[in-house]
Length: 201
Image (tube, rainbow, N blue to C red; front, side, top):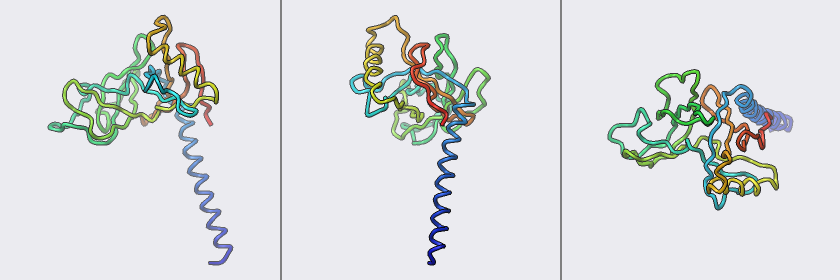
């Protein structure tokens, strides 16, 4: 192959990669800018090991969905199959958003103006027996923090999780939810105080 064709192929490949990366960044920025904001209460994954590297692992009240809340459970199935789940959220009196219903696959009807549908993913093997819960991954289970800031956050989360400071409101994550249900972390909140905000780009 002539050398100029190799150069052209390399340029086309580089432009395609740049275009794909730009599309991904623009999509994330659009959700952060235009998505509906919800505040989720944080439940640390493991109080003994919250910080891994430069990010904090997070769980939420809405990370465990009661089986009875899922409107379209497959009849006769004992365990979940891998796939998507739509969890409908509504704002509580304390400011945190909580699940009100859920559907495997897609929601049966559009959310009301005071509700939002958050798209999640479940893996196969969760028990569908009455009284069980299934775990949901929303893609917002990591929050990256500036170097050197994580240990203080980790320690404070441990205190709040243990109930050592009951008078303090817990940590929360402000999430922007796009029209397709995709969530993007917008900010880490300590009560009403914003600790860290995600930049658009």
